[in-house]
Length: 244
Image (cartoon, rainbow, N blue to C red):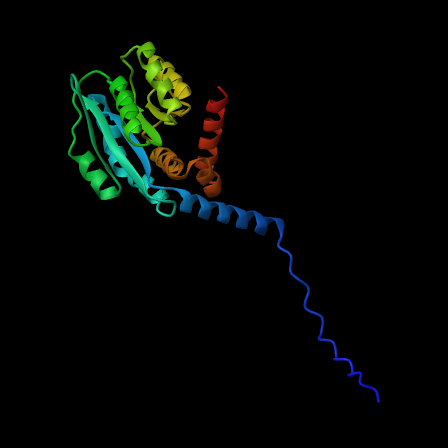
């Protein structure tokens, strides 16, 4: 008697596995990196500082309308806490609390009127250093058009900000060569970046502010994951300053 069982008919062969193209793989990797950056990012802390002397009123009004771009850019990549710092008059330099929503920051900014006076950028840098010693500050943004302080008096603080991982991103309105030389040096020493700011092209400022906000919440990985033109521009500046 033969105890062998008849062979079971083989199932039909499975359909071939569809392979992803190079573009699909790259998109998946970028998406995964964005998710990782968002999950790992704590609330970023960014200081937005402005020269509020009389010549700055048009830029101040523009900054009020554009600061929401920073919050919108990081809505899916952690949260952003922003502190407003401004100087005006003869010796007035003030800082707000850190806030994390557009409406709060805009209310703070719209209450302030520009007044004649000299620049006090040194106080802004010293304040940022004090803040990050208490709790990490991820970036300092400054918008101004003039420099009436000695760069040698500011260089040491800018270098200390670099040691604490606080890059200074400077947006210069106008073409004052003295201001440009000082601003570029502070950006270099802090491992930040300098940009020309034309108030007739507000989208440029809005896009770069958004990129800096993304950097403040997730660092380079977040910029590389989002991969917009302004992100790539900021990455080039940051890599260039790190080699300087």
